[in-house]
Length: 224
Figure 1 (cartoon, rainbow, N blue to C red):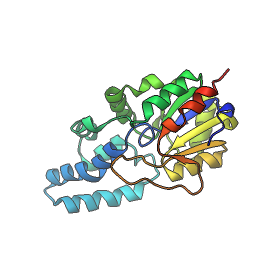
Figure 2: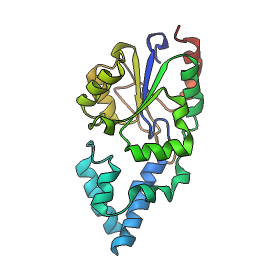
Figure 3: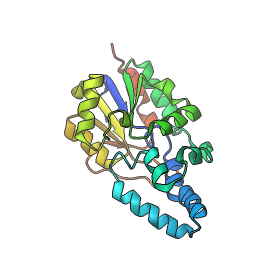
């Protein structure tokens, strides 16, 4: 599936790729609209329609991922509200074995998430996911998201990875296409980001639903 002898750096998305996307989907599509309807005295359906309309306008932009933006737009403390359901934040069930194998193999393992720093901090607090990574980046640090070619340019300038020896893993098709366009040679799509939803299919990318299928090949091809 992947030629691990040619991969020395692994760039990993967070939500849906390392963490179960159920928390985020439930929060933005169900829980937060309900809290919004309570605050403004409107029906949940009206709240959902208003928020979803705004979500669609901002898809693929830094604002969509920015908790400060949403707190100001809704006049509600998004980070605090997220904590009300923080028990739903969890690693994918196949993530620990995969990430441990990557570390043991001597590869450079880097988190690259569009999530706001406050969201990243909460998820580290809940899962201790930082122990698996050499470096963790929120794209807010660069002021631009993974959907943009500029992010990859800025990230490469800062981190110095070789596109020909780098694997990028994500569950978002626009982001995967952006990474491929930039020239990252090894790309892997995640079919099942949300444990409560059906799997997705990817026609143009190698994809996987269980990282544990990769463990043996990773460990059989350590970085020398």
